Image (cartoon, rainbow, N blue to C red; front, side):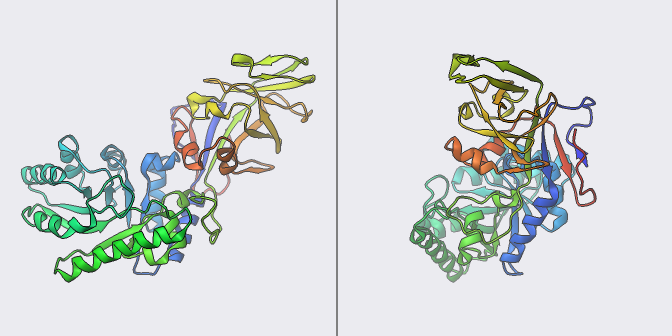
Length: 389
């Protein structure tokens, strides 16, 4: 067991447990889905979806990830500073302010405008380095990427920049986790047509990649030369519409402890605004976990947490640092009892998707918003049992 902040000597009252073994397990499941020649680019952006980018990246590289993918240059620099030497691809196209850091860190860039190209080429020329780039094509997402019909012209323009090596062409699927499948199949066909035209025109582009987590699971025709799994590495399915074809293991558990118990009469308002008023004599537990830690305020009066393996309703507004639970129906509750906000407890399991569905969001949002104030405790393959704080 390792801890994310060894300088903290006191046992925390709220914390995150991350099962690196589960992440490696999920990575190996992804490998089993794709052909041996298809590379797996592990997505560790947004602090590895809240799980901790450095420990997760190191575990995935050790497990055999061909490449790590991040959203921003700053995320790549964090990994490099931690000694991660694996290839890192940065999804956000660089402007002048990011180009030099990207080149110095030896990262792979994504471009889709002349300005990105010129920024990179200028820095690479000044530093006497060559930079691998991937051209982003928009097959339907509408965010980043050149039009498919502009691909050949864009590649011809890139030939004027010897500092840049076109390593790949990529795109992103907007609807792979949402029916009907015909939309995604059309996007895949568009990308395949781009690939065919590029190769027929004599361009030496060694790599084409398109598949996110949902497409990796449900659209094998989208695998091409590499897949880019993200959320499935962390044990969540992209949506309820994606086939449950793999036994994924959720990797994150969010926990706290009861610091106060209070018996209140009927008619008692709780927390800010008295949005919850007791209807009967009630026992209310307070835990030191709030929206400053990433547990959402709009979970107020909507979600449950597990106390001694039993669901306990969140009552009243979630505060910045504290949340209230109704434990009237759990009479054995004691001060110091462990509370599972989502994830795996000693006696039960509360999927993050259940919590997310209750507040109209997705599990991705919940895990990525868990703040740095909470220490993260890691299990690795050599330490299968987690010592709780």
